[in-house]
Structure formats: C-alpha cells, structure tokens
Length: 410
Image (cartoon, rainbow, N blue to C red):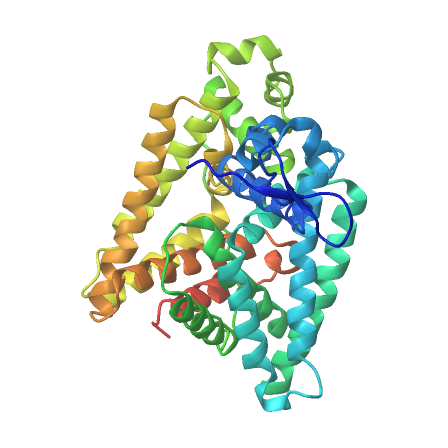
C-alpha cells in the first residue's frame, strides 16, 4: 500500500504544506537496543563466528555504516547484549530482596522475576554461556564480578528459607536454579507466557528445595589400556582436549597435530577438516550416551528407568570429554547432512527421556514435558563445567538428585 504523508514546514506553530517526498518512518526511540536484539537472535541461531556485521545490518533493515554508528564492532554488540542481561538480573534481584518485600516471600518473588526475564529474553542465557569467551578480558572480568555478586545475594535468600544448609550447598542450588532459567535458550518450545513463568518457578523451587545426598565420593572410573591407541584416536583425543580448552574456532589443525605428536598436515590423512573432527566427536559422544541409556533402560518400570537414565547421563557427562565438546557442534560450519544427522541423534536421545517422563506423569502436557527434560539436561551440562562447583567430591550424586527433582522424581 502506498500512502502520501504530510510534512510540517514553516513555523513551529504547524503551518502544513504538501510535500512531494514520501514521509520517513520515525526513528525508534532506542535504536541501539533494537539492533542489539536482532544481533542476539542471530548469535543464538548461528553462533558468534557464524554472523557478520552485514548479516546483522540486513536483518535489522539498515546499512553496515548505520550499524557502526551505534557499535564499533561485532564484539561490542555481544558485550552490550550480555551486560544488558546482567543489568536486568541485578534489577530483578534488587526489587525482590528489599525490605518492602516480606522476608518469607522474597525467594518466591525473586524466582518469579527471574523466570519472567528468562521467558522474555531467551537469547541472553545462550549468549552468556556459549559466546562469553569472545568478549574482551575486561568485560569477562566485569561479568564474573557482577554475576558473582548477584549469586551471593541469591545464596543469602536461600539460606533465609533453609538456614540448616552449608553456604556451599546453597550456592550449588542457586547455580542449578540459574540453569533452569537458562535452559529456555537451548530449545524453541513455547508455552503460554503465564504458564511458562509458573512452570519455571515450579522447577526452580524444586531445585532449591532439594536435599542433596552426602556420603563417600564416587570411585574414579578407570579404563585399562590394552595397547597404544591408533593415530586416528590420538588425533581425535587431542582435538577433543583442545576444543574443550580453547573453543573450536581458536584451534588450528597445526595445534591438533602438535598435541598428537605429528605434523599439522598429517592430521588431514585422518580427518579432512576441523569440521570433520567435530562430526566424529559428536558421533562418539552420541554412541556413549546410547550405550549408557541402553543399560539404564533395563528397568522394571518407567520411573526406575527414568531415574537410571538421569544417573547414566550424569555419569557419562562427567567421564566423557567428547560430550561437553559436542554441545557446540551446532555452532560449527559443517555439511548440512552431517549437522542434520547429529541433530537427529540428539532428538532421538531426548525422545527417550520424553517417553519415560510422560509415562511417569501421564497428565503432563507434551510441551511442558519437553521444558522439564531440557531443564534437567541443562542443569547437568552447566554445573559439570562450572568451576565453582565442578570439583565437589559428591557432584555425581548431587547432580543426579537435582535432575530427579526437576523431573518430578524426588
């Protein structure tokens, strides 16, 4: 539809004349925030390295130079998005943990505010978890400082309702609750907003009310070596370790060759590209999960099977370095067929959880079941690589108990 607009000219009192030029659309009040929101969506879908300035400009309907008027580079956009998420989290925390809110209601108010924030800004958690290493060191330090202060405030709120807990356990429960909220960024399942917020509050409450197990630490898993690994296995192991330490994009084939004790070009005899290495890592992780699941599902009933499946996932996660690395496979440029194959394997695995969960809770809507499963998996994934808690001696048992709580098995 074409319309002709009237533009004001002449004095400030509003003498109107017809203009032959089309009316310009009004400039949004907070153009910078809108551009950042567009970029956040692209970063979440493709990963930081998979998005260029021109991609962001095109998606926002502006030119590259117009984008540079607001941000100096792509890294500045990422920093703006993540730090704005921290701003929101600080605001929610300050509003909930104030003298104007009764002490008995502060934790529930806090969880409700955080759940609403998670539903409304799903992309923030994904960028914080996966793309944070791309920020400058000073920005990463600032994020750690501010998020640490927020977490300390949450821990005090939990201790107000559960004074019997050691502070370290209360902090672990807060990390787990944060993962529940962050889990909405790893899937696209939607629930009506009011119910979505209530569901996340329900899951986070189940987490902070969990009684963590105590006892002897799980014995270390040892694997006997029956000979020298093949050169291909050495290359795969070296790539896995380097990708886990530095990230996929920061590692070269020469780095992998050096770690495996061979010249960089020799790596190509075993894998044609870094993407091929990531595909192999993804399939290796999937195979190990499938084997663990097959053993866990030999159970007398669905509830027992789901408990065992959760325990098998935690055990495999803590003892299989390929599994953590494979989480970033969707952010790697690889042939569509390989990416689709890995995605199918992941969906099949999640489908096993959904099948058991809906059998245990027959009245649970399918979408809510999916939200629960992803929340449980995200709790395990996040806490297993969070330095503040990953060294706990009883972590395997604690993570299993937290997953049981999220799944309604406690």
